[in-house]
Length: 198
Image 1 (tube, rainbow, N blue to C red):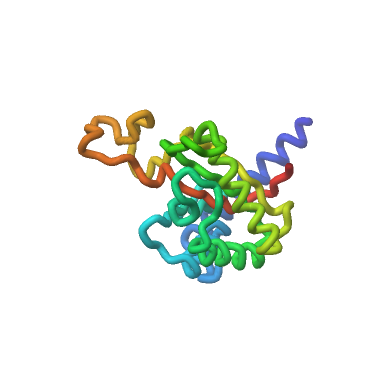
Image 2 (cartoon, one colour):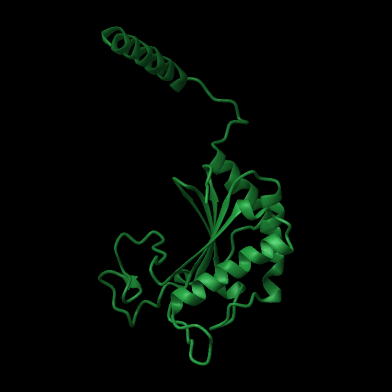
């Protein structure tokens, strides 16, 4: 055990020394962390515009799109006008080995006269419909896709340091002066950077 510990310390010192030598060298231009590459690919096909936000997180890349592109108020049926965006995402996913989690986040839906009881129910129905479309018409593998619905429980914070989820405004700002963050109603396409299993 003593020899194993000594070998571990020596290999750690050698590794760290090698890293300090790399700091002064320029890495090849072709090197990109995977999440940066994913962001580049998606941004070239879906450029930044109102209602589309890219976020790099430890689990991968999140492509957040305002849910109004996909759904009408109180409905889980996908709008035909959104199929161009959805088909673009499908084309990209066909070229990637990554798993994709489709998450719907929504709040304050008028559900009177609908089959849904609350925001969580409609949220799951919306993400499931997108995944089913991607499998049936986009011919993606069901193993590559996951559907989740969070309703109002994971608000979009953006760059706000402190956020009052009940009021939908940054802390310390009056609700009358700051509208609810429209990205609290969004579809997140989470392109995972690790292998996922059901």
